[in-house]
Image 1 (cartoon, one colour):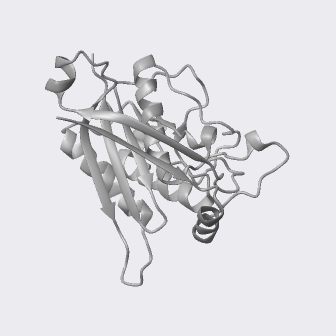
Image 2 (spheres, helix red, strand yellow):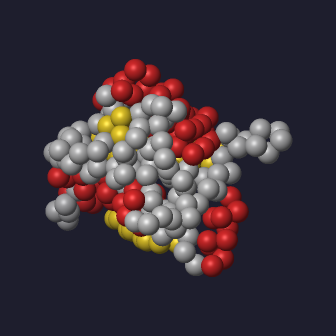
Length: 228
């Protein structure tokens, strides 16, 4: 009837940091630490190591309403896909496309009904380009109007904890009705043709997609809807 779900992760401990450095582009920093993580920005230089955790209670509608719970959102669709070719080369774009479409199909929603997308937003050159391409492949011209946020610009890359942190951020945005800006998005990358949010005065909409992907080619997506 009810379970506690969540995750914790770190890319800061020596072994974890070594693992991260071996498999993806990591920023070496700059004069102002708050300006380093810049998802989808032309001048991004890599992910920023971090740590964090988040947890939620996932329960049936009947259980939640019976105990008078504050409901932040309803899970209406999920998707998961791993795409790797015969030479062991991952295709993160295709894995993300598969996951997004599976979530929307399960929810029986139209793509134009999605309020916003919470991107993985790793802030590496390759991952951001692949993710932006996946979003545009699914949403087409709607991508120009579809708000995209990325909490990693605020908190860095907490490894396995990132997906849960980002899910909580978007659920709170649904509750408050307003999105949070993507920090340091100063020079939009033409290779990442999405609508990244830079203002705190943008409506969150009534639903959102939460995207996660790993370098090995596995992606997941969850579609949440606000509850009146």
